[in-house]
Image 1 (cartoon, rainbow, N blue to C red):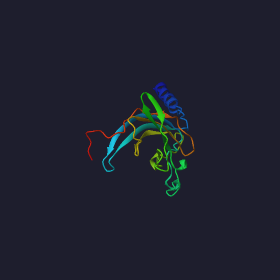
Image 2: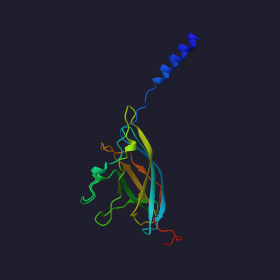
Image 3: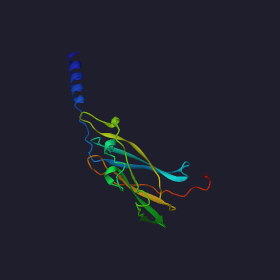
Image 4: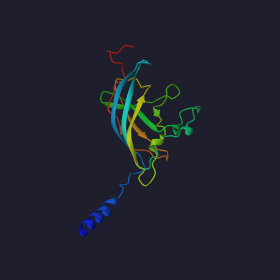
Length: 174
């Protein structure tokens, strides 16, 4: 009986000392999907971008007090998801230049969420983010490179989406 108790005690000590696997404080993203949707309220085609993320220090999201709604132009400090659009011609992709005086650049904001706060040693957060892309450039086929930035200013890796059409399908009427 003594040996059994000693074995259980040693086992508990060994298993309670499992190391936490360190995750980089630099966010990492993984593309999941880019699908076409129809926004009937605005009579336009929209894109729905889904991607997974993991961040080792849980500093994803902009605090509401950091947003400046009346700032002139498109200051990148107020955004943390950045898309770079490309149009396809034959089999070659060309970057699409966005005139930000006429059309908003494809920047988006992930807001801070207190549910993502972490205390203790393991601050790693991960999940899936869905972005509704409006004001799509109208080409037959587009794709995006995209990346995110955390509050510490760390940029994630860059991922590339699959192709997506931006024309309104013939069977859709508004």
